[in-house]
Length: 198
Image (spheres, rainbow, N blue to C red):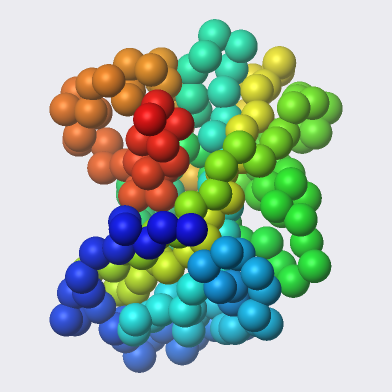
């Protein structure tokens, strides 16, 4: 795994006292080494504050049959990267859960996408990255990339998770980043897309 995507920390990136009451404080994530080997579990909030703790995560790119990727805007209540656009969902598997099972769960919870709408969910890549979100926290993840193509594109998004959504030509998005700059793409999605076209 490469960690060459790491950036220097913001000196104020340590979170706040209000974080103690955040729902993430009651959840755990799987700590991992650079090769994604499990190192036990850690508190999810601890993993995303201060200098962070490397942990397992995933992002899933959802496509339609025309090669468009579904961009989903993170709800404004999200602690990190609120209002940014993701392609399409991202989260963390719990201990003992596969990336595929975790992804299928989040697709349904966030967007109302059920397994009968696809049959090709698969892991296509994995990378390590570290990014600080000013004054709020950090993502330090070994991130699996999964892809899925929807035959049926009906969606039922949860407004607590998804602020907005749009279908975008994936190749055009990659080749014309300046045209989409106002969307403020999530860093893990930008890395996954860059690696996809490398």
